[in-house]
Image (cartoon, rainbow, N blue to C red; front, side, top):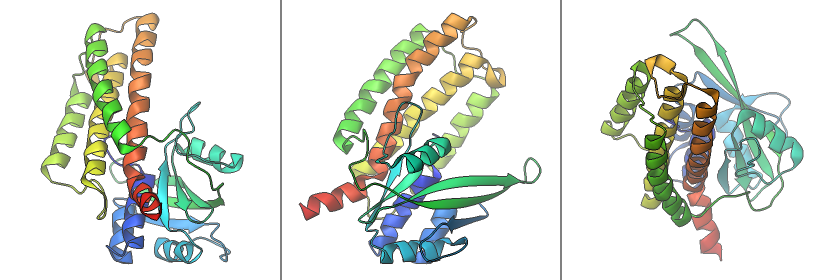
Length: 268
C-alpha cells in the first residue's frame, strides 16, 4: 500500500475529469503514471483496444457520472456489486473501478517486459458490465477514520507483543520511499476530493506500510528478522495482521469513493 492502486488513480482522476476540474490530457497523464501506456478493451462500439482518453469520453457519453474503487481479496468482495463474472475478474486482479450512473466497470490486466531496472509496463483495462447496486462493505469516511485509528493502536500493541522488529534493507528502503513521497508534497488524490478523504487515504497508506514491514520482518525479507521463528508464531503474526490490513483496504476504498458519495448526498 505504499502507492495508490491503478484503480484508485483512474477513479480519482476520472472523477476530476467528470467534474471539469482537469483536462483529458491531465487526467490520462496522472492515471498512466510511470506505466508506458493504458488501453481499454471491450468498450461498447469498439472492436479492439482504444486509448484511455477516448474510452473515458465514451463511457461518460454512455452515462457514467462517477467512478468507485473495489479492492477485493479472497473472502472479502470489498467494493464489488456483481455480477459473478466481473467479481471474478476483479478478484483475480485484486482491484477494479465501477461506474456510477451506468453499468460499466473496468478491470486492469498488467503486462511487463524488459530487463530488471528497465521494465516496460502496459495496462489493458477490460470493460465489463456491472450490477447497479450498493458496493460491498464500504464504510463512510468517518467510520474508516475511526477504524484506522483503532487498528493502528491495536497493531502497535500486538506487533510489539509478537516481537516484530521491522528492520533491514527492505524496511529501510520502504521507509525512505514513504518519507520522500511525503516530503515531495505529492497530490494524494485528484482535485475535487474533500480534505477528509485525503487524510483518510494518507492514514490508510501509513497503516499499510506498517503491515508490509511487519510481513517483511516475519519472513526475514531483506535481512529483517522479527522473532517469528516457528510456523505457529508466523501464523499468529498473520492472524494479527489480517484484520489490520482489511481495515486499511476498506479505508482506501472509502477515500477513493468519497467523490461519488458526495454526489449521491447532494442528489438526496
